Image (tube, rainbow, N blue to C red; front, side, top):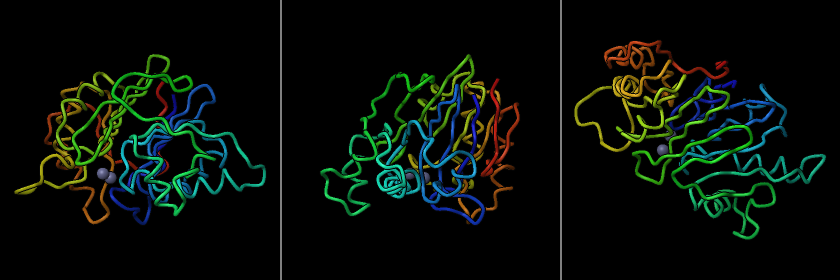
Amino acid sequence: MKVTIVGCSGSFPGPDSPASCYLLEAEGFRLLLDFGSGALGALQRHIDLYDVDAICLTHLHADHCLDLCGYHVARTYGPAAPYPRVPVYAPKDASRRLAAAYGMPEEPGLETAFDFVALAPGNFEIGPFTVTAGRVNHPVETYGFRAAHGGRSVAYSGDTGESEELVRLADGADLLLCEASFLEGPDLPKGLHLTGRQAAEHAAKAGVGRLVLTHLVPWHDRLRVLDEASTGGFAGPIELARSGAVYELA
Ligand SMILES: [Zn+2]
Ligand SMILES: [Zn+2]
């Protein structure tokens, strides 16, 4: 399995990264985890515009889903349109919400380009991947994911506060893409985001092979996020996500 970080900026795009988007590839199948603001542009550095086979959305905050609107244009009106509909595994309100974001009537909404499938916790097959979805700790319906293929696995936190479900999803994963949106401080809101230290604590509990800190908010000093993660008790390698970084899990 090959994992490419397309976008890792938290809450909105930064100067050197779109918002959340991760490309997973195995056996020629291409699965996106999240499709946040700006990701459609950077995605084309890695694969052809029309080579997305499936999309999973953790939740419906704009920085995780909004580029489906632009991608709808590409697949509905591109030179060889209509292109096959791409399955989009997302919280149940996704079709209506994204139609509203685009300014489309609910029927057909974006259904000409996408086949929306309502997420629920559990395991399912997407192409060659076994995907596990679990509810994490964020103010709206939000899922973390684990994707496994060929004995290797990657877990992705989505947006979350402290979450036992995230530990379960990431259990023994080769790679954990974990959000680290907050810097340590007094009175951090609960049930929203993690600090670098908390991300590392989750990685340690789950016993993952490698921790990549992501959803990095542009107004923070990311070296401080990395420094705080070093206090979380995780003994494995920790690094900051970077748009364009590739991890070969083999
Ligand atoms: Zn977010
Ligand atoms: Zn969010």
